Image 1 (cartoon, one colour):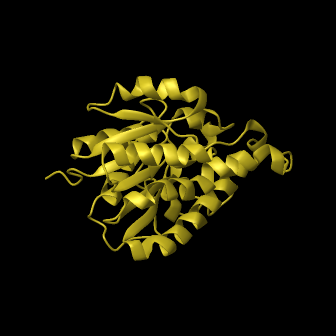
Image 2 (spheres, helix red, strand yellow):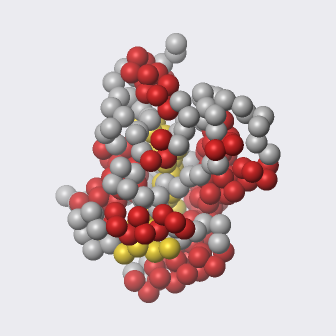
Length: 255
């Protein structure tokens, strides 16, 4: 049985086939979904090339979440293509170099504010883009990295993830009457292009090696994709405002 049969899904955050969102998109296609993916800025052409690696007919839309004009452009394109939307994956994030590393005090608000817009506020932007097309309810899923603690070098991206977690709960509260669920998947560290931009990413890998009771493979994102696809399906009809940890159990274990 295909758990996403004929569902129309908007998936953001694909740059390469190593992107977490790529695995979600491919599994969603395998499970019967119709998929449109998005790219932005200098990464758009890379997204378009990567789309050809997906096994299915997948359109690519330009969607810069900081540009209000793109909201209406993407909504109009989705309406023309499908008429309605059943769900979306929020898998975008950005923080300039000054917002990462060991000096938490180095960054000014002007230097990191765009990072908050792209990494956290954008889940609201994606929601308002598709909300008029979700007449039958649906699901919005975001990719997260556990923001309950302070991580080495993650700095302002960690704060942005905390904002994303809070925003997802408020969205869940706001969109519940529309039968729209909003949940996050907090993944363990995966070797993506985004991960490479984090100074000291090796520290995350080493920490998971010794503490995750189920173990963890930084090169395998398939478990993350399965969790996202399950939440995008109808299998969790009464789950919203939740953060599902897919991290080998790391989050639950003390030192």
